[in-house]
Length: 278
Image (cartoon, rainbow, N blue to C red; front, side, top):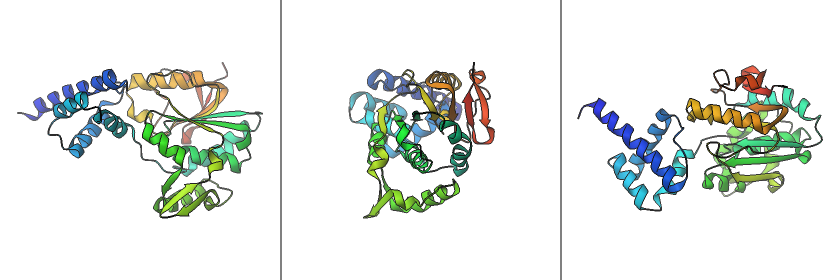
């Protein structure tokens, strides 16, 4: 069979898998970028030992244990604490002074994965004296990721990179102040989780998530198609208080969004935006 015909067949199979995930398990990946989702499905197919997508589809429909595994694989994101340190430095230097003017704060970490972004912000807010007036909401659709985030335990060999990022972000203390090391693991201080709610929330299907002062959603939109990106940006706009802040990933932008007019650049080079005072 010619490569073009194989490609068309695989494209059909991918659509059927996405529809099956929605109909069978109520996870909607139909608005995800096809290039990204196709690549991940191929990786998963090979990992699970299926010869074709159709074979994996059959297992997905008839073996209840396969669905959660597929969802987990499609939603897992690799992150690190204080990833892109200049982003967190910009939050410290430019956003925090504005946040200090509020008596109480709500921060939403959307697509929190295994928690690195949340712990970065929790430490930053503690160092800047804002922790006790802040409620954090860390959300994801991956139940396993949320469980890992709520545990706050990471392999010790990752800590060196976390520490360097923290220092470069303008950290006011040592990262070692916030975790205990034992048996090859670093367990982050339970007190960092006292003011956070970990919750299942889908950017694809769920509604507005409260009156937020800061939303940090980095390296999630790159997996969405244009329609879903627009829906998500509208969701963020509706979820922010007047003049609230939105932080995106280094490869993401509002430039071509249908809802770009709802925001203005705040720290342009770090993809930090402020909701327009309309």
